[in-house]
Image 1 (cartoon, rainbow, N blue to C red):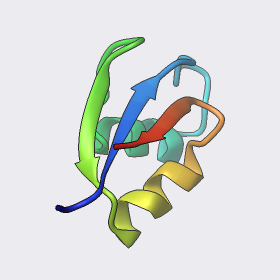
Image 2 (cartoon, rainbow, N blue to C red; image 1 turned 45 degrees about the vertical axis):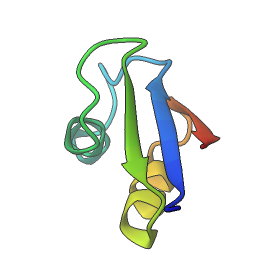
Image 3 (cartoon, one colour; image 1 turned 180 degrees about the horizontal axis):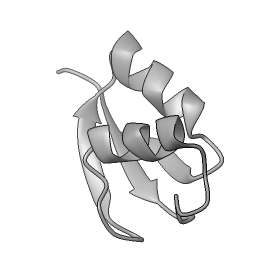
Length: 60
């Protein structure tokens, strides 16, 4: 079974750098406390690393 990441937006991207806001949006996170499940591949892990201070991640 393919591993997935559960990503939750816990801090607001308002006032952050435009690249960080775009990364949050590209991950599919729209509102505070929204959760998405994405595959645990290198691309997603790299995006999460760029906004690690804004999100909470769990491996499923």
